[in-house]
Length: 310
Ligand SMILES: [Zn+2]
Image 1 (cartoon, protein in one colour):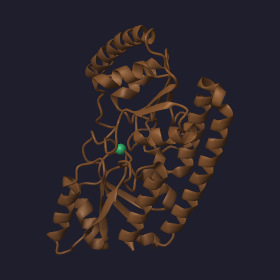
Image 2 (image 1 turned 180 degrees about the horizontal axis):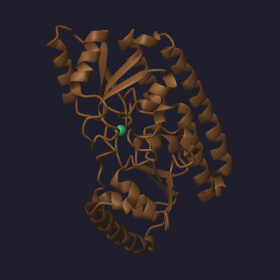
Image 3 (image 1 turned 45 degrees about the vertical axis):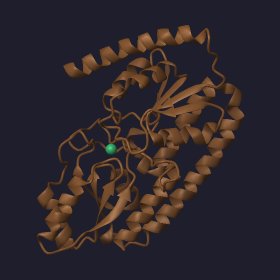
Image 4 (image 1 turned 90 degrees about the vertical axis):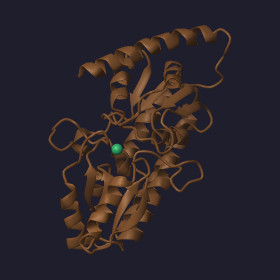
């Protein structure tokens, strides 16, 4: 662990201990009416919401459009974490430094990485590593169904009085996910295999590519903290104009400039590549948007990709 990471965790832990003390004092004047659950991402928040409905008070630390790779907790997050009955996070290093913090907190608080029960043989290793895995598992609906089960198991241990309700909600939600899986596969089947090339800003779509038989090319690596991924810019530009790829995609939580640079680079070769639309990658959209829930996000992305690659 790097020195800066150790300092970060140490200082954050001290702040959390302080926040817990303040919280314990405030409990004497404030009584919680519902269990308080903290999630890191909007995708996890939506998953928990589908099981718990309104039986809990639920917050996401990272809002719509927020990049989890770069996120650092703010002061109000520390108080939320300190007062949480359960903390759900993605794990697999999605939350960068916060993930290490949650691992330490797990000794004292119910802290659950929702990806913890996914068999490692179903995870995709990060290029160059054998035991570090791509965290973007939600792009394979069948893997996310495993995360739903993990969330459910943690909930019924901590909140057993709602176990029957949670079980039924989980069954209903898993059925909706199964339907979304089948619909999305049907949509992708309308695109010929050779046209299934997805070019995006950062490497979030490897599980998507595996599930739907799609070649995935990204400008940046698995984390937005990292420098370019497996492909360099010139390689991507050449791929686009030699294969006449019709569209490239922007992501809701990543600045657009790098994708625009690719479009300009291709134009220099006399070929126009469209911007295929905005995909939701590491965060859901705002309430009322086309990516406001996990299922909406999956269907919006698939609709956008299929329309652009026709
Ligand atoms: Zn990402």
